[in-house]
Image (cartoon, rainbow, N blue to C red):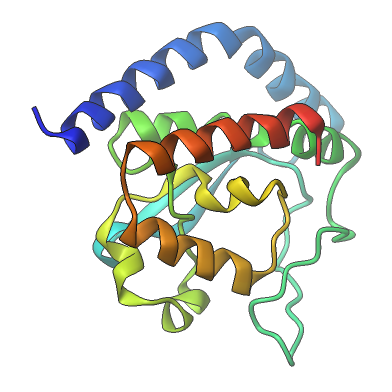
Length: 187
C-alpha cells in the first residue's frame, strides 16, 4: 500500500471517528442555526475546485445570512472576515471551527483529505500554480502551519505551493499539529 493510499484510509477512519464523537455537537449546532432563522437552511453547499480542477461541493454549517458576497472591485479575491452577513451563531461556530465539521462527509466521499491544499473558488483558479491541482484538497490546509486562520491569499498560495512540492509525512504532521493549535487557541 502506497503512502497516498494509507493516507486515504487514515483520513476516512478519522472522519468516521470524529463524526461519531461530534454528532451531539452537530445536532446542537444544526438546531441552533435552524431556530435562529427557520427560513434559511442550517447546512450550505459551496462549489469549489479540487484535484485536476474537478468541481466538488463542500458542505458547511451556515454561518452567514444567505446572499451574494460583495467583492472589492480592486481585489476580486479579497475576503472580509468581518463580513456583515456573519450571524451571531456564525461568529461562534467559525471561531471554534464547528462550521467545517460537515466537510468530513466530503472526506468520506473521497473529495477531500483531512490535510491538504485549500479547495479554491472559480475566481481563484487563474491565480494558482498548476502544481497545486495535483493533490486532493483538504479540510485543514497547510496554511495552518503559519499559526493563523486568516493568512493573506499570497501567503496561502506560497504555502500551498510548498505543500504541493513537499508532500509527505512530515508536512502532513506539521499541518495537522498546527491546525489543532490554531483551533485550540482560537486564532
